[in-house]
Amino acid sequence: MAHHADAKRALDERGYTGSLIRGDNPLKLFEKPVRDRIIESYYWKEQCFGLNAATLLDRALELTFIGGTYGVAQRPTPFLCLAFKLLQLTPDKEIILFYLRQEEFKYLRALAAFYIRLAWEKDAEVYETLEPYLADARKLKRMTREGWALTHVDEFVDDLLVKSRVCATTLPKLNPRLFLEDEDKLEPRVSALGEELEESDEDDEGSDGEVEEMEAIVEEHAIGNGHGNGHVVSDDGASDEVMDGD
Image 1 (spheres, rainbow, N blue to C red):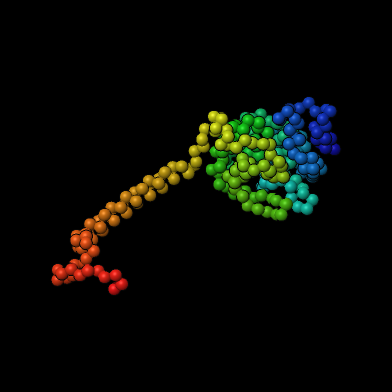
Image 2 (cartoon, one colour):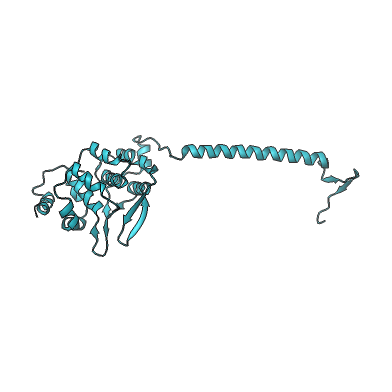
């Protein structure tokens, strides 16, 4: 009950004195119905009690899927509960980056990416931090309202950067990348496939050159045999005119 009261108190505008994100209580980044379901959930009461940034790591390593709410009752997933707890703790950026960079634990990485998209306020920093993980193609299990689905780390990160709602949560506004490039706040992004595309273009150019060379040889051969005048040379040296329709 103490943990339940603590969460309620954190949402009480009259007594809140903690960290602010975008000038407001971080927990309010989740809609009230979702907040209420999280606070009333078994996972929140039993598994999130007394967690700090270090002990939350242990819980995050146990995650086996991502998601927002599921089922008819729209129960919150452990993933969503831990994201809510992170918003309550508002850890230092170094801690979140430590979570994000753990190569072995893909669900921990997804949790950190979700938190960064929610809590970090500088758009350019969000892009610069998350875009490298668009190259992570590992599979993720995702729980939706309809049931299980399969996604990948890069797809999840892309959703965070381009969609307005992910995991039952309306994300804060994020300026488009091209806008930030025009404002000189971001360098143009270099695709991870850039080198492969360049090599493909070079191969195509080489193929075009070979085709042109072959065509020239064929044309030269045809001129040599047919004198270039629309006639073909017979075996006895006489030329017969090529007649249309024969």
